[in-house]
Length: 241
Image: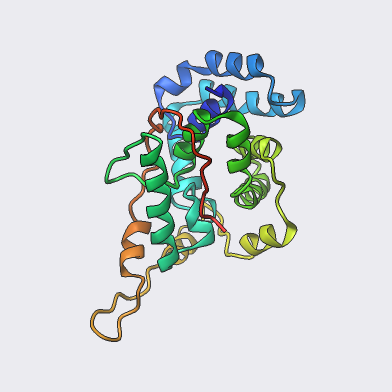
């Protein structure tokens, strides 16, 4: 078990009393593994302290505004590379099949590309494999870190740590392509609604092929910690490119 990934998964989960009470254990786990530099550790501990001491309802409201309502900060990986295209549906199937091969069965209301679930999965992988797999969506993490930096959000620290742990480093063009997408202010509810506005659903011979994927995109699993997952032996591939 790589506890650093476990801690990062918990920090990106919907705030709960159990998470607040685990602040000391999370700090101890980060310090014990020594995978995070002192500077990054200090930034991460600021987030842990904020979650531990701030009013829970305020934390939950901020989480929803950032990660549930703001499409550009979605914690679903394929939202940033596939949108609601048919490719997203296939990527979901491929990743879910990978989890199944490793012994993880997820519920019908859960999406496999939810970042806390992905990090929980990495925590149980051989460390070298986890670092390699982490490098595949690294451009997404870089874009999320930049968007959170613009908002002065301490959640930025989680994605900065992921960038340092990934075997591959993000390419500027890949980051720029994601950052070129609309990024409305979380307090601008009209702009947020416009960003999530669905295209009309058509049926019959002239219908587009995004109906299934539009449904998938609206199934959100952002309000629960990811479950534990057993390790496996085959090197996984994450279809995010």
